[in-house]
Length: 449
Image 1 (spheres, rainbow, N blue to C red):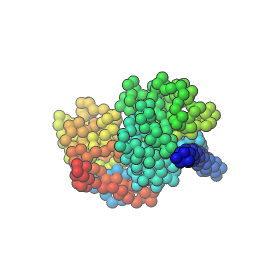
Image 2 (cartoon, rainbow, N blue to C red):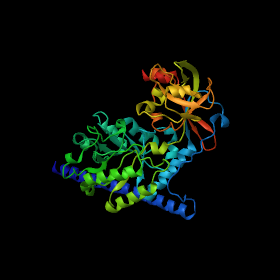
Image 3 (spheres, rainbow, N blue to C red):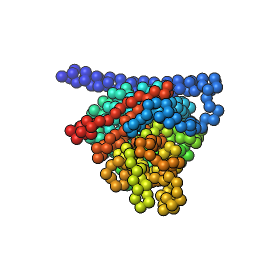
Image 4 (cartoon, one colour):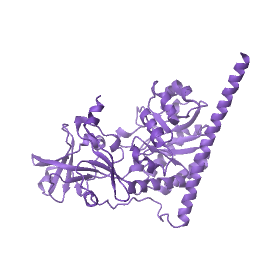
């Protein structure tokens, strides 16, 4: 019996050493990937292919009207444009190499898994916030996820661990409940809350007073538990490098005393590095200085919007035009509440190709011109937005193209009211439109099955 106990104890010690070795090997592989990216960047610079102005400026030229280069689209459709997607991915990959950080894709903003082969040419990992997203990472992207959830559930935690390389706990109570279940299987992190964010829309501010996200510095023990490897912090929403610079100062002020014990830090999403005018030089300089202060830390960013920013529209059509009290409304074959929910939630007014957004007022309608509300085809009274001025009268059947409708929009849609869901397509670089997904009555029916 004693021999068996000694054998079991020796085996457990060996497994722990093996797990530690595998973690070190995984970290080494990530460093090698970053080194390869740096060498690639140096090659591009040497051969003159790197843009002289390192501040990224997306191409402003719009894709030709879809009816000009392909068969007429008679049903609503989201169209991902491969050339624009690759433009973003290439920029992010090069930025990661220059800053010696890792960028991973957040599924909460983009999860069109049929495009993953393109993503895998540029990045190696993704981030998940649920069991379904973690499974998508492992099964479809082909690598385990960096997973965070506000609260893991008893019947899901083991399956999530099986699909994850990293698991971040939102609270100390969740850590205490589950850390032994995932220790040795995943690198364990803790979400922190620096109690500072410059996000103005409270709906998207994870650091607002009373936030349910993260642990504040005053609640952390002086010595972290031995199995906590990293901190995860999310404070941004479509933010610039200057906002990150100010936020980073708050993070370091409150949490840097624990950095010496950590192996990694994840600065979350909301870093809109592909937006025109984003200060990439400031970002690179900040990260290089951060590495000098904490050379042992592996740094991760997990944006969602940045990957799919300005990569394609939602193409809709006018179904009818109605008038009341001097206001003309073009009713479309899409719905704001079903297919563009952020427009109503935030709210914000989407860019409509060939039209100018104007504030609704009696004067706007009185001054003439072709001014319309755009209305969704659901029974919700508030399913409309106003208003846009067009160059000519709208006609039934006419295309209405909503720009930049891929990130977040495609993952937040619903089938409320049984409204037909737009198809999803990919416009390849050679001009070929591939329909990735079409929705039918069975999709609506099976949601209730």
